[in-house]
Image (cartoon, rainbow, N blue to C red; front, side, top):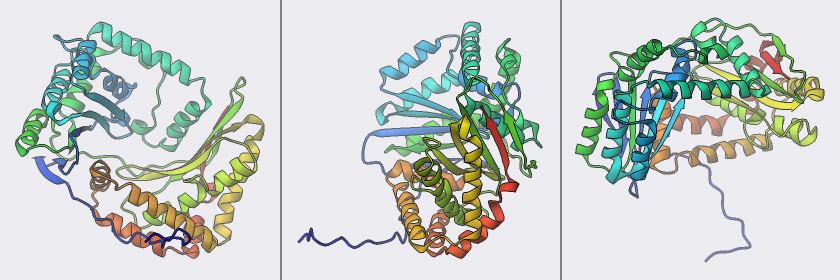
Length: 419
């Protein structure tokens, strides 16, 4: 019988019961991860390529990524998308520092046909002159628009200076990149990083094994030959650099530093520190700089994962007249974490919030495959999450202060402002 006058008993997460995906070896170095247990007819197929923005200069990775479905000698870009639309499919693409992804969403009855359309579009990409011109024009216009946005300028300059020791990671876009298309360079990049650059496949859907085998046969010919290597050991200078923009009414702030890869012993504990500082709506940065001071609509902090390293960043946009005050308040919150113990009630709140988010992240086959992929890509196993639960529940105020002293010294940060 429900007793509405009594608060239900609360229980903390002890363990997440994962359903491990089926794993197929496309090649010795390329896997297909398949989550079969889906309670409906939907399918998602993700193709991961060694084609991130750090793999080529002159904005070539982003340009080729935008051209992937721009047409073959037989079918135009419009025809390709109309064929997929007619089958109820949806395509999504994404490009990050170290990876490019092409995703197919559809019903299981159409996965083979849509996959054949996508495979043909990429395999037989024609680099039509009109399509290349259209993509370059669109990207040039978007670049011009972005140059007027202080958050974009700050983001690009933060990347340029944080990764200054490695030109592959620090080179940022210029308008001239989109002027005259170097089709020969685009074709070379497409061949090396797409037709020979597939690094993994993930699949969610209630399919038969022969259908999975057919997808491996279709896309497996693009598999990389050998293990993909990524850069690490970056060096940067802790300094402040301002990029004034007279007509801007706001200033953007990007400040941060390098940390460590996901496998590091401090990774999980630092995530707790990061959440307290700026990674949920009730965080200290939000409470101080948004709720109390009213300097911004939003401010946050986060840890960006990479294969050989990771970095911490604080992000916000504020009125130009309160830029210096905002930086002082950020320093105040960093210093407070280094000098004062976090109250137990605040830490308990963040523990419960973090455990709840972790449990939410494992809700359903799509989310579970993403969580498995999120550790497997870094050479970790699902035990990472059990270890995360244990560390979250046992972390102390003293440990939080210790990490803040080690990693959150204001003078150790690269600070970029634009506006």
